[in-house]
Length: 164
Ligand SMILES: [Zn+2]
Image (cartoon, rainbow, N blue to C red; front, side):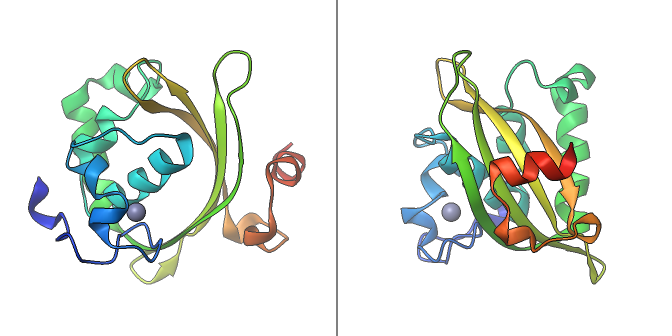
């Protein structure tokens, strides 16, 4: 599954502008765990962009409902999503540190296309640390086409008002 893993000096697929080896590379190649929810978010976007379903399943929190189908089935589903979309950019818009239950939030805008059609979206993702690393719990998503404001101008509080 690692055929598309970029080489060390390639710009990171999370579009940070940094080299892959100095950004999400160490997380995708399992040499270290993402140190915080924003880093994990970036690395998961990079994993979608370079088709790494195994990493995407490994970084799910055990409570993620997709896991009910079993890891292998989920990996196949994610692999289809990886191929279906073109990942053109990631903007981290806002984040909130862990609350009393340990849940941290990240709001991001992902620029994605499906067969040339703009399928970009804003998502508020929830993350929890499981003792090994930060893991993706779930997310609330709003497609760009359904938003009446500039998606990149949203923050956690304004996003919450929009989707309420
Ligand atoms: Zn990166």
